[in-house]
Amino acid sequence: MSGKAEDKSDVESSIYDVVKRVENLEREVNRLKALIPYKLEFLKPAPVSLRGVAKLLVSMDELERSIEEAKSALFRYEL
Image 1 (spheres, rainbow, N blue to C red):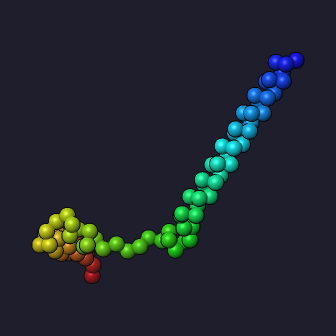
Image 2 (spheres, rainbow, N blue to C red):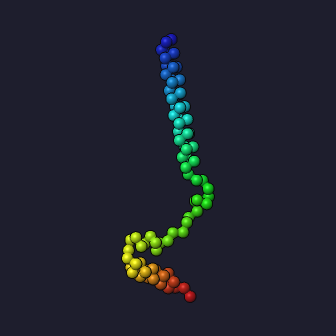
Image 3 (cartoon, rainbow, N blue to C red):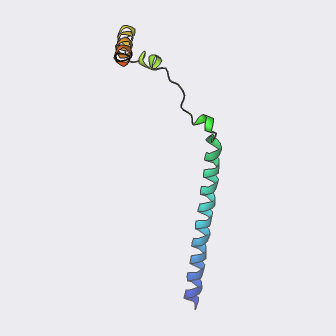
């Protein structure tokens, strides 16, 4: 009979541990939710200046030349 009582105590202890872990995880998730804005306006893509980004990677002359080539290729078939 004592074996069953010990098993029941172990099961209750395990369940208690799991409940505590779940509560801790719920608290952590709620903290993370507070850090992340869930407004749709934040999810909309924002315009990015490729010219500004490219300045970091290539010289200004090369950048201007590439932009002109891209423009001419893009509008080549426009009427």
